[in-house]
Structures are given as C-alpha cells and as structure tokens.
Length: 395
Ligand code: SAH
Ligand code: SF4
Image (cartoon, rainbow, N blue to C red):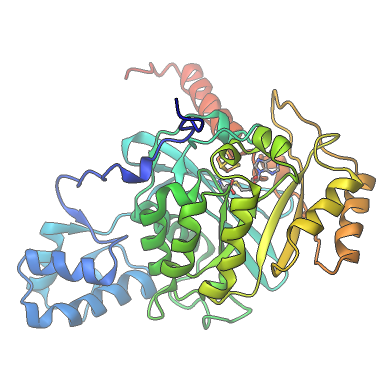
C-alpha cells in the first residue's frame, strides 16, 4: 500500500469542456484568439491585426459589444457578433465595508458564485480574486476548505473578475500608466477561493492577459499568487507566469503543518523550502511572501518564531502574519495582539520584514478565510427574501 494516499484531486488534469454556442473572446490569449478568428472566416493575413484591434477594445477600452468597435467594418462587426461574445461574470451583489473594502459576489456559468474583494490602500488598490469554486484542499483553519470543490474557473472567469472590478471602479479606459500610483486597481492577489496551482492553466492564461502590455498591463511584480504548497507547480509558476509568490506556510514542524495544511503530507516542509529556494532566481522576483496565520496556542510560540527564521534562512523573504479570522464553528482562536507582536518582533530582529496583516472588510465578511461563509449568508438572505416575497424556489 502506498504510504502517501492521494489527498488531493488533480482537477487541473480534467479538460475543460468547450462551450456550445458563441465563443467567448474574453480569456483567450492572443494566439488562441487569432486561431478562433481564422476558424470563423477572418483571412489569415489580417488575423494578427484584428486580434490587436479587438484586444484594445476589450482590454484597454473595456467594451463589451462588437457594435462599438468603430475601426472595424460594419460587416466584420456583424460577423463577429454572430460567432463570438465578450462575456464576464455577472455581479450579483456588491457590499462596501466601513473601511472602503468592496466585496462582489459574482455568478459564473452553471449558477456558481465566487467572491472578489477590492481593498483600497494609500496610493494603490489590491484586488483579491478566486481561482476555483470551493477548494479540494482541507486546511483546518480555512472556511473555503470546508466547501467541496465544485470546479475550476476558466481564464475568462478569472480575468473577468478584474474586468468587473474595473467596471465598478470606473477605470476604463484610462487607468493611468502601468506603474502609476494613481491606479485604483494596481495589484492582484490570487488569495480568494481555491488553490490557484490546482488550476494552473486557467490562472496562467488569465494572468498573461492581465500582464499584456497593450491591455490591462499590470506588471508581473504587481501580481501575487498564493499557494498552499503544490510543489511541482511552483517551478512552472516561475517559468510560465513569473509573478510574485506567496506561500501559506503557517507552521514550523511537519507535525503541526500536517494538521493545518494537509497538503504537507504530500510535500513536506523540506520539499517545499527546496522549491521556494529556487523560485526567485527562475522568476527573477525579489522575495517570497511567507503567510503565517496566527492561531492561539497552536503555532504562535517564541520557539515557532525562532524555528521559522532558521527554516527560511537564505531565502529572500517577507513574513506576513495574518491574525486568524474566525468563522462559525472554527476550531481555532486568534492569537492575542501581544503574542502576535512578540512573534513579529523575533522575526524582525532576524532581519525580515514581518508586517501584521490588518483584517480588512471584516464587517462584510470579506477578510481572508471568511469567503465561504459570506457566500452562504448571501445565499440564505436571498432565499429568505424570495420566501418573504412568496417566490417559489423551483429548480
Ligand atoms: N489556496 C491558496 C490561496 C487562498 S487562501 C492558499 O492557501 O495559499 C489565502 C490566504 O488566506 C492563505 O494564506 C490562507 O492560509 C489564509 N487563510 C485562510 N483561512 C484563513 C483564516 N480563517 N484566517 C486568516 N487567514 C486565512
Ligand atoms: Fe484551499 Fe487555500 Fe483554504 Fe487551504 S487555505 S483550503 S488551499 S483556499
């Protein structure tokens, strides 16, 4: 019997079904867009130029209809409209927190819903996007982990989250130059629902679109992918995406990490650290963010802090301490502020930046790890509303 029973489901190997009906141009990389245009009658010689034009309309101007693409002939526009659509997820609800954080509940094909969180900060704004509906992993402190995976998001649904946020922020067509401080949506973090490295291709294609210099044009340094530690995909991330990497580290011994982040049973701390050591060189990024959720009495002692510093020696790193965000039925408590500060101090003294993440949008359940409960609450309240309005919930 194998000692390492499979604890994850390799969903990234399940091919995506091609949609029936018109093809969505959103989410296709330039080469793929060129192929579908040619397949539907665009002369090969013109295809590259047409991709350039359409790309600009979609990703610079933010258009959603072929009608308005005024540098294309009327006939060509009509032909495009016959075969293609420009489709992004539908925003079902939007909530705005007291601290300005915005949370969107968006609906994707099949009626599934995911959450997208926009966090405005001084001189910048970060969009936290989801890569899967639910998650196959079962980290014991994460509410998303208690929701079974429903499916991977398509590249269109991933980049579409960025597009709907820009709609809401009114950031088409002039978001400022790529590194402009004035951009409202200046950074993306893949820290919403799901494990991005179990949807590698979907995430890669969407992020390539976000980085395209003639479109949304975000620098790869402004995109951070957070993984629980899918070791074989880490090198691929460096090579094929090249974005910044964050890792959900959360423990300093395999015993504790096995419990908190069960993927550790498949790839343990030593294997993870090897992969992380190689990352900055290959991706040419400065440093890796170690995320560390502070759980009272579980992983928050001074010894843990010292061990952490020892483990990561030699890796350019920043340690992001995340006060645990509670959710109904959670088996953990947040470490006290004093404990978190003492832990941070040890790491800081060892020469690492050790910011304590300020929970944002707690009043709208938008903070890290709270996303599932938010969805369920939203669902419930809609059901209640329907019940009160006497709408029967026929399937
Ligand atoms: N699946 C990826 C990305 C999504 S989770 C990953 O695990 O890295 C984004 C971050 O939120 C991770 O560091 C995760 O460990 C953390 N997180 C999850 N639940 C949390 C909670 N209840 N409180 C605080 N942080 C949490
Ligand atoms: Fe999945 Fe990340 Fe939550 Fe773990 S922490 S269950 S990998 S979303």
